[in-house]
Length: 339
Image 1: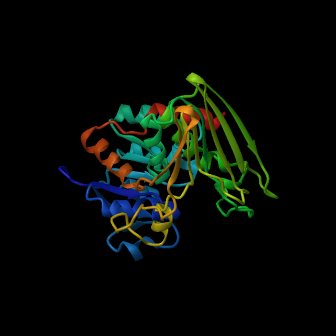
Image 2 (image 1 turned 60 degrees about the vertical axis):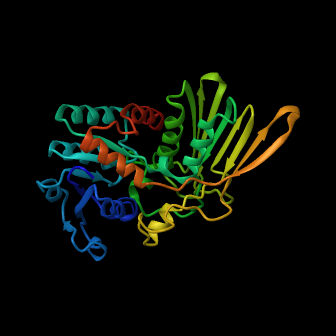
């Protein structure tokens, strides 16, 4: 790295901080992981002895050396905490969803511009192995004109989860749509842009649930392209995460990215084998030739690369590069989420 590392602080060290942020901050020479907020149990120091553990967010924001704050707190706090960090003179990297409403997102982005600070949104599923493979196949043009695209991200979790902000109806930004919908919408928008129109369907199926635990978006695009985004918390048999149909063929791929599981098990992004899907995870590419002659190819997955997002953060802050997850895309996403 040509410039000095970006001194960074984490607002929380729960699952998100432990898995999706800390390992990348300590293995990327472009960052110095200085501090984290831990209100109760002090866990970060067991893994990262040099990291300061603050008791409060105010202590983190008052640390003059910290340049970048990662806002990885509950959804309903993102706007308030990001605004506080910006007003404290810090760049921010905000977990999805960026905020609860498109109006909040606009206020954040406007404040960042006014203060000369970067407001960046963390959309790591752009760097999943399966999505990278799908992107390659679509951009190759081998499927012809696209007709129908399906992205799914399913779970089977009958019990009501312990995270109150996701499961309580009175908490803004609750439910599955704001949780996993932010990922799928971003996948679609990053490939195809803003839809011409959309239909949103949600449902609640778990006993005692106060929030949506199923959603489907049907997005329509120019040239008769239809994109379907679906997720449910009671899907016992997972179907392919990616199905693409075009005039010349189809591509089908299971959602088998391994990065989250590897990080959860203690693997680091720099370890051998990180991000590489197991054998048998190849996508199936079916192409139709002249006289309806069918050929089948098995497409190995790209290596999953959450590190790519942190590389982009570094170059955006240090070199004023264009961040790939644009503010316009995030505004479109919030329009769909809040509808």
